[in-house]
Structure formats: structure tokens, C-alpha cells
Amino acid sequence: MLKGFRNFLMRGDVIVVAVGLVVALAFSNLVKAFTDDIINPLIAAAQGGVSGPGLGWQLVSGGGTGTFLNLGGFISAIIYFIIFMAVVYFLIVLPYKVVMARLGKTVFGDPPPTKTCPACLSDDLNPAATRCKHCGADIGRAAA
Image (tube, rainbow, N blue to C red; front, side, top):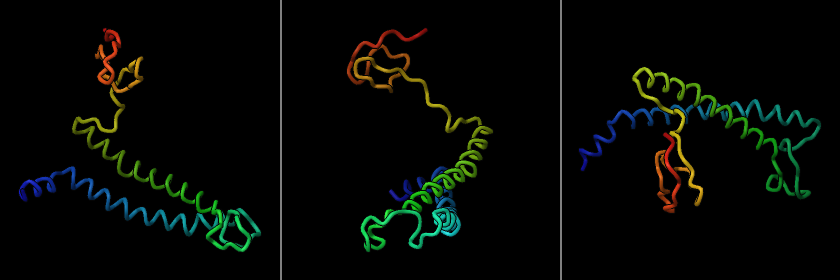
């Protein structure tokens, strides 16, 4: 049992995923600091002349931060997500695609073609199928 577990851990895929996760988590802290320390003040400054927690609305007068609708924080989270996903794509996905292409493997390619059943509208059927695997309906002959 332990030998199988050791073999699983020593597979190249597991190691690559583990390293990628560690790098992504470390980079996540950098992006969060960027949005918290640079983007958030810019968004708050764009509101102009209002003292308070930032861009947003106080829902209840005297309610404090618990009832503050923080629009600036939400915009910051969207910017954080876009920056983080762009970095993951350009620093991890694209180089991985290039390496795998050199090895003759296609990764992150277009999904294989499928056929849709007219009866149950399942769209995960093999293009060569003549019957739906979900409802058994006749879906016609495959195109030659």
C-alpha cells in the first residue's frame, strides 16, 4: 500500500502540479498586495472628496463597516482576478503548451466534436453515434 502511494507521489504530473500550486500561491500574495496597496487607493481617490472606507455606499446611517456596500473592494477583486489569471496563463499555461508541443502532445486544445440529441438535447454524444446514450432516441446516421 505504501509503495503504491510513493509511486503516486513520484509521478511527474503530481510534482508539476504541486510546484505550480506553490508558485501560484506565492504570486497570489504579490497580486493581492498590488491591488490592496495600489489599486484600492486609486479607486478610493476616483470617488473624490469623501472620507470613509472607500468607494461605495453606507446602507444604514451610523451603521459602520458592517453595512457599507464596498464597491471599491469588489472592483479591486475583479482586477485581482484578471491580473492573477493573466499571469497564470502567460507564465504557466503557455510555456507548458510549448513544452508539450515539442513532445508531440496537444494540451488545452479544442474539445473534440460532439453531436446533440434532438430529443433530450444532450450535447456530449459521439459524432458517429446513431442513438442517444441518455434517452435512446434515434439521432440519425453519422456524416460520412
